[in-house]
Image (tube, rainbow, N blue to C red; front, side, top):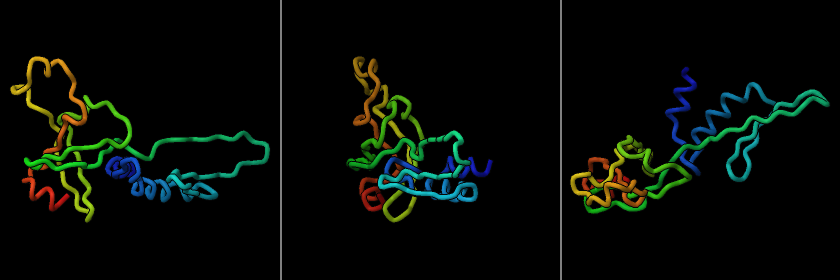
Length: 147
């Protein structure tokens, strides 16, 4: 259970899988003959079998849903650009962790326009990523300095 917890808590947005890759390498190394990382970050662990035996491949993702901050608005809300695919309707009211360039982690919450200021037409539609924001409880100046 400790390994599962460690894997679930490690951050690994597409293109930023180093933490997950390090855990995988550490855990698989005692059981394989060699480990390779290719030019795009795939981690390949090889266990040689007996000559003539069937070959088996197990494959899985290292990455998770992720975003990059593309803009901080005048209210301190973060605007996002997605890394990889996902269903935007699953994001509203989710807690997120922002990893800053200096290694700090800031917690935020994904939000969208409140229902009481939506038009009847808006209420019928699911929000898109450009309509979502992350509230990190900072002023715009504080957010720009930290993130």
